[in-house]
Length: 86
Image 1 (tube, rainbow, N blue to C red):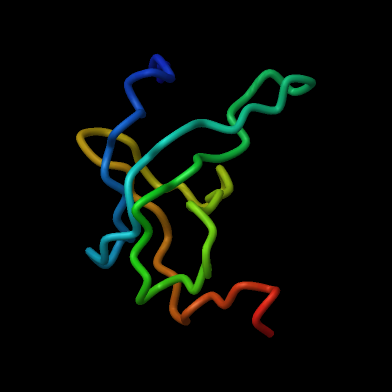
Image 2 (image 1 turned 90 degrees about the vertical axis):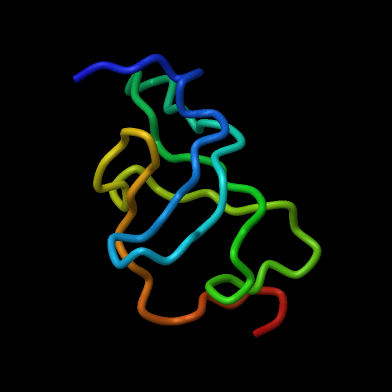
């Protein structure tokens, strides 16, 4: 299945258990492999991620389960802490 990358911008991102993660702001591309390596997510759910003053997170391609009207990713079972705070 092929999709235009611009169609991803603005899509809401949810886990496969229905928890809102955020909204797609950009797409990370591996130029050498010629494939999407992840999505940049902004407006992040602070209950899932402690990102401090950062603007967003990158979700790796391998976490993405499905793309349609929303982006579905694997559920994160614990809160992910910012490395600077640990």
